[in-house]
Amino acid sequence: MRAMLLQQPRTPLVSAELPEPQPGRGEVRIDVHACGVCRTDLHVVDGELEHASLPVIPGHEIVGRVAALGRDVRALDIGQRVGVGWLGSTDGTCPYCRMGRENLCDRPLFTGYTRNGGYAAAVVADARFAFPLSEQGSDASLAPLLCAGLIGWRALGLAGEALRLGLYGFGAAAHILAQVARWQGRSVFAFTRRGDSRTQEFARSLGAVWAGASEDAPPEPLDAAIIFAPVGDLVPLALKAVRKGGRVVCAGIHMSDIPALPYRLLWEERELLSVANLTRKDGADFLKLAPQIGIATRTTPYPLDRANEALADLRAGRFEGAAVLLP
Image (cartoon, rainbow, N blue to C red; front, side, top):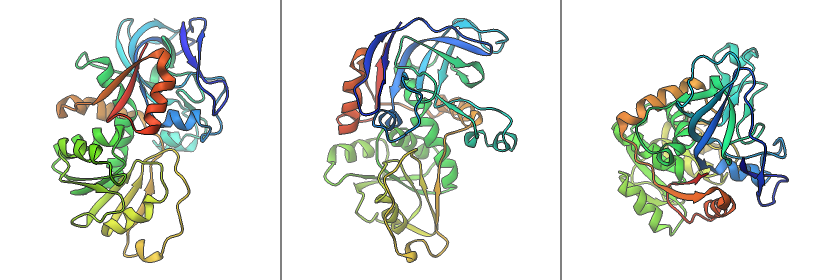
């Protein structure tokens, strides 16, 4: 099968012809129809996530069809449409799994990082972590929901019942979450790089009531803010923007160092939280709700062999929404 392989960090992906993977016990082989290009993929490729199982096939926003069943797989059928996200498997026995917090599992595997992912014609996945998908929507439109959508959904839950919600970094995750938040009746405030009028206008087109630079104060205090951009300097800015008792949620898997900040920004019971991965319940809940919301993802398609170009365009911010590879 064709695949794009990361052999060493900070090097371009290499096109390779590999043997078609065979599912083991409890696994399925999926013919990949679309795979989103996530900022986490950049962190893997750039070596900012240091423990990749190299060589590895990146990609964890996978939509495809079940092509083969491993032994003891009974919940999925050949030909069924499924999605696969970042959390590839958990041990099910560690203290976090036993308390219902499998996103914090001590011995997890992550798709496209410690097990092969979807920058390929096919992928083998743990059947327990493959989400059944309806036939509604195109493969490309659904792919960004498998991480950008899911991590945004978990971050929104941690933000609480915030009516005035700030989103710092308006990329793939924020453009999905803005639609969810508006559907829930929240007011969305979008923060971008200074001078990025194109992205600010994109945010307004999705219902944001205000869009401006990250350094600017919103027109009214926020109840909560979610930071998607991997920039630690945004943390004190977001804390400054939220009201007393407000929350700031850091939604990325990697972030540059957070600078020293005066205690007054955290005082008055403001909270600073992080999001780590997601649970299967997060995925099932969000993917069930997404068709009701009518989320419209903005996607830019790339053929599989242009994965390096897609990553470079993501790094440079050359598109709105999400990039999607089409094997």
